Image (tube, rainbow, N blue to C red):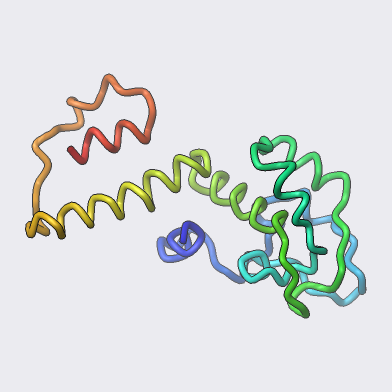
Length: 158
């Protein structure tokens, strides 16, 4: 949902090469010389050509962006060329999280909280109350003492 939201906002396109956002991927060695570069669409649809990596997901649930980029810089193996075959890849979704963080300027977790969870909660609350145009009584000044962007947005909603 986050990538599609950024696409809808015109921040990126699903056909953008991933190396546009992660320059370390510009120097990948693909299985064939005529392989197309990996796109955001390939990462979303598990068609980037990465081998299945279920154990990777378990070991790297809390990996930092720096560690992810270090892993990428050491090289990525391929099981097929991009766009040719589906194969589940946690690495692909990890790279999508990094892209979301990079283009939004906030952490992936904060982006999801602010743009997906809080937005959905707010819409559900408004629908439940029967008042779709409900205005908040709080002002931005009311939330100025809160340091976290997520808590700041929550205070603004209520």
